[in-house]
Amino acid sequence: MRRAAAGLLIVGIALPGCTLRDDVCTTIGHASIARIALDIPRDGLSLELCEGEGCTPGPSAQPERIGAGDPESVGRLLYNLQGDSARGWEADFIDPPASIGYHLLDPAGVVVAAGSTDVSWARVGGTEECGGPLHVEIELPA
Picture 1 (cartoon, rainbow, N blue to C red):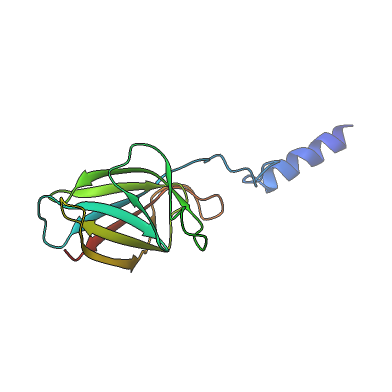
Picture 2: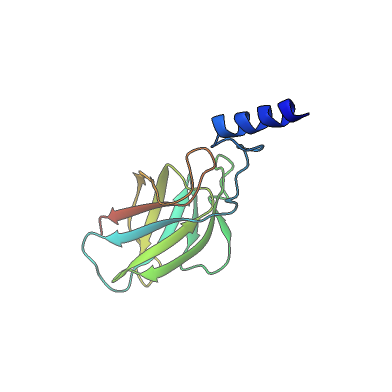
């Protein structure tokens, strides 16, 4: 009995970083944040974020799927879009996209600029294996 206990102790010492469940990830439902600004800030424009042909008007305080009206779209979950064209916007995503489409609208609802931009997210928490929150700064041409 003592040999078995001594063997367990030696294994425990030889593998100090090992646990019974190394594959357990604790971060669930984290938000990834995109800070979006105009290259030349101006008042009075609103922002819609798009995926494919579907756009979500902002600001939005309720979770929405951008691109949900487009059958080709995955419908990324955007659960917050706040801000304005003078100071910029902050968009929170559950499933951050590799590119973001946008429409900038004047007060009458006319699109004054539109396009898409590839997004290079940077990890700001969590791990590569388990995921975690990401962050990106985006500058749009006005």
